[in-house]
Image (cartoon, rainbow, N blue to C red; front, side):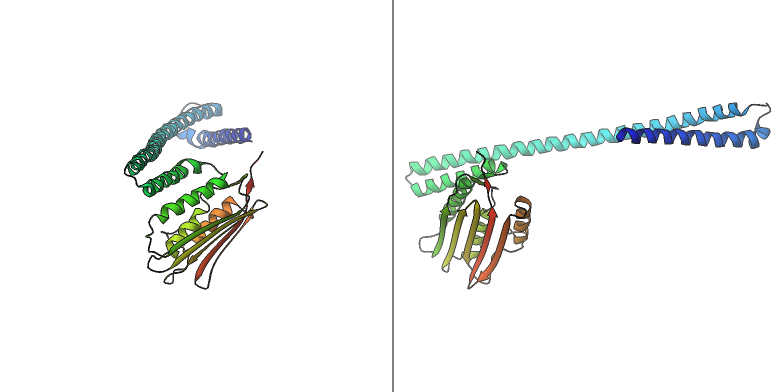
Length: 283
């Protein structure tokens, strides 16, 4: 198909070139020769002369166009090379920074054990696990559901370290069904928990978050219920929050026609419910 287009273009250019030169030669031979030429020259001479001149002009124009294109192409190559180097540097930094932070967390972990603060040591270890999962495990399209659940538990435990003993803040997480041998897109469930913590916890008043995860016949039912405080109503379409619209878009891409998402309020509680078909791990 491409060869046919090139052939058609070449034929069109040649036809145009010949037609223009024929027209110019006819005009020269019939109307201008008597004024500018004393010799009785044939029509063929005029045609060849005009063809040579036209070809020279066309050659100069094509050379200029090719040189201009080459210069622009070289500039584009330079820009792309600079962007590539910048991207590689940013990627290198993204690899260095987590490694540095892991070393710092390991140092804090060792010091907390040395000073006999086991609760702090456990929190640091959980935080390191959170970071390691987000940096290294989420590069895959799918991860084992067990890993995603473990990540959720670590996230909840790290947050609970911020809660004072006297605060009436309760977070419950119940799991039912067989969560083995099934995969899920990474970081898909945690936004529900983050939202519930952000909008459903007020240390000054009693706050309750109930999280339930059930798997039956490779179908996931994930439900998060949180207390509503001061008119806050859960998932908001804000640039600073996760946003219900963003969640819907992500689910529509990852699980088209295999999920349902509900979000509503009921008796002072915000309820978000996700149902989707999990991917069974191949044997």
